[in-house]
Image (cartoon, rainbow, N blue to C red; front, side, top):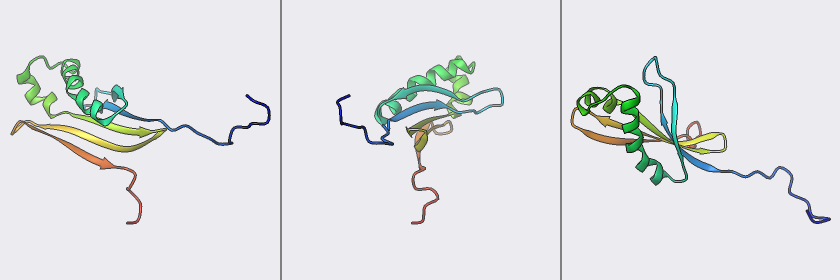
Length: 114
């Protein structure tokens, strides 16, 4: 460090990451972080690979089993900044019509007056 130069007090670095999470969905499970990504696009793309892994982890070996079990499971993508969750996207498969959807929640605006 050069003489006479000081760092600003209280300066923090803030890193934003996207976590892919398999949340608790049965009494015998615990929440599992499946991956950490630098962008939302990369995290959403990785969800389908992590879901295949989850099918096998919970004991579903075939697509037929998956249609009645793991396909109805949720997978989360969470946007973290420091120690705070800012946003969350929940991926769900609808086994009745074989569609999937992303549901977005923004935690930055909850509890604030409009």
